[in-house]
Image (tube, rainbow, N blue to C red):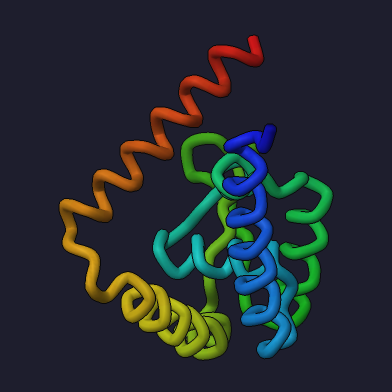
Length: 140
């Protein structure tokens, strides 16, 4: 008997391969692409926010931060209220590098969704939300 989750896992692996291949074209890793994507979408971010959303290990994020601070693409800023809390932001050079990449990615994603109504897309996401909730509940 085939497990229904096998096909979901294959889809997830396919998405990962597609995004990894796209990132590689620009000299980025899969995780770096996610970090830059998040930074384009948000003016500033903590490493914890990115780690939690994209399931990226903190050591990987530290390497990302160090690499791209050296390149001048991101900067680290202390929170004015809590000096222990640090935010990373894109510099202008970082925006110049990442915006064309993220715009191309976003255009490809929109084109891939063409033909799906907003309602259909929302219903697919609702199904995935339910599957995730059920899986979490049954693994506890």
